Figure 1 (cartoon, rainbow, N blue to C red):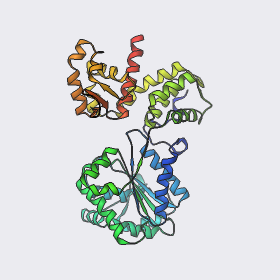
Figure 2 (cartoon, helix red, strand yellow):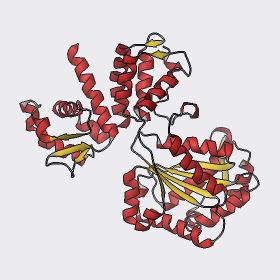
Figure 3 (tube, one colour):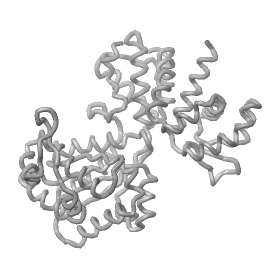
Figure 4 (cartoon, rainbow, N blue to C red):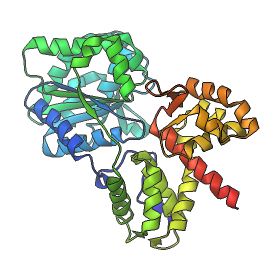
Length: 399
């Protein structure tokens, strides 16, 4: 089938029309947004593994909120943020940019006044022009600034939703943790309506890191944990998505391995779905085509989602072979003794070095509650990738 006609969107947030499942999570998030629309400040933490669809979920809720709950919103990506100044600059700049095609843009632009400047080819876009001392003021006056902005928008919008995504760097910052706590405390003691919902998006370990730095944050967040898709939801996703742009049917012997190797992670589903689409020759996808697509997806997933240090480390043929043998088991945990029994002599000689290297890179970790010599994959994304690698190795050995 034509590659450009693929309904899958690998590497991008899921389009609203392809959103599957998550009814309970969507309702919880919408309840926070609606509370903000009634003047009550809410702060939530959307947690889940890499590839689980956190960004897509909050984006979906954001669009629903704008359409049905009369809110304004901004989705701020904070990857590589260098500190509080950079964080507030990105936040207010994104509020401006995400409003540019909305009816309330003039009010947002008016709020920022002379700090708005046109940029890009022919001035097609805008950005905030803020000096260092002005950014310092925004850090300390974040709450009053948001309050003034919501007042400016009150005739157009009932509340403001701010999504702070990809907080990996900030999660280890004591300044950010203390700043978050001060924002919550200031709003709580003002005794005034605050129609703002702040959603922080990240891995569960990032939330734990913030709590370790500022223990009071443990009771601050409304935590929404995103679970993997069930097998039924994964199958529904594939069946519905294949039929979105064409009448494509998936045979049972094709659907089963696709569901199995997806592991409930939407990011993997889009890569596998797109690869199978490109392999398929007709509108009836066979088991052989599905397996071929799954194997082709392995390289793409490794290049896109494995950390460069991990990808470099597993270029060693012996390390790669050990990982494949570990991942042949569908479980995320394994025991050193059982794996060693399946290795060649050359592989067994480097097993302990391999385990130490993978631990240092965060691929595996010690299973403390199990017997000695027990390990598990640190996240499902790594486990699924190496299962795909194991499948590919089997396919190559048959050729």
